[in-house]
Length: 236
Ligand SMILES: [Zn+2]
Image (cartoon, rainbow, N blue to C red; front, side, top):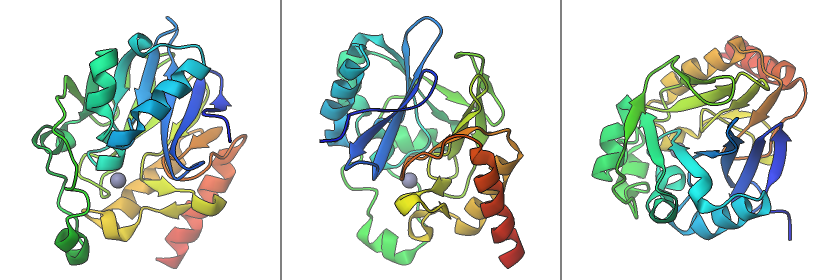
C-alpha cells in the first residue's frame, strides 16, 4: 500500500483520497503548527484524511481551516463528516458559496452531464463560514494567494503558497497519467472560460505544482506549465 501522504514541499502534503492520485486533498502546515486543509474529498474520504493527518502527526482538532477549490462533490463531499471532528473554519470563493450551502452543484455546460446530474448526487449542504475573492492573500504561512480560475465552476480557485512557490491547481488543470491537461469539458460550467482563466497560472513564479487529479510536478514545474499553456495558446 502506498503512503497516505506525499510531501511535495516544505510543510505541504498531498493526501490521496481515491486511489494513488485520482482525487487529492492537500495539507499546509501553518507557522503555528495548525493544519490548513485544501479540499475534503468525497463523503467517504474522511477516514483516509484522518489517517493521513495521523501519519504526519496531526489530530483532527489541529485542522483550523478547510479551503475549498470549488463546489463539486469530490472536493467538498467530506467536509461535514470531517468537521464534526475538527470544527474548522470553512471557506470558498464567493461565486460558489450558494452551491455549497444549497447542496446544488453549479450547472454543467454539457447536457449529458446535466441529464445524469452527476455532481448533484450525494452533494450535502455545507455551511460556509467565510468567502474569499480573487487575489486575496490569506493569512497562512507567508501568505496564500487565491487565484480565481473560473470556468470549471464560477467560483473555482487555485491557490499559490508564496513561501515555497507551490501552486495547487484545483481542477483548473489536471495531471492524470503525468500529462497536464485542461479541466474535463464535460464537468465545466464554461469550458472555454476555464481554458482562458488557466492561463493566469502561467504568470506565477512556480516551483512545484499539486493537482487535485494527478501526481505533482516538483522542481521548476513552471517550465513544464508554461510550455503546456503556450502550446495550447498556439493551437487555439
Ligand atoms: Zn470539479
